Amino acid sequence: MINNNLFVYGKLCSIETRLELLNRVIYSTPKTLNGYNSSGTLVIENETYKYAFEDSSSYIIGQLIQLTPDEFLEIDIWETNAYVRKEIILSDGIVAWMYVKNEN
Image (tube, rainbow, N blue to C red; front, side, top):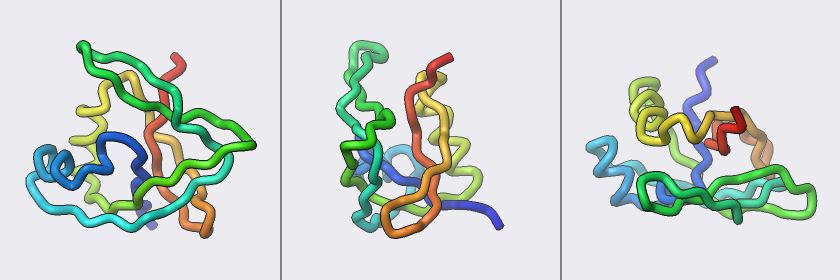
């Protein structure tokens, strides 16, 4: 079964950003991810972006969206090689992808 869930916690929380990137309105559902912190920041082309890292004492409140495989490829390009997709389990047990900082 294909996992088309994406947990977002930064600029992709904006419905306008998703519309601009993917040319369609993608609605979201509020979700929580335990064991991660989203206070990391990095600068790409003079713009600041958040990144998440594991932290057992923290949690992230974000949004869950559903994407097609082609849309995932578009987001992969938009995220640049600064981020990689990681499969995670949300606090309610839903399995989703999330972009985290590329440590390589």
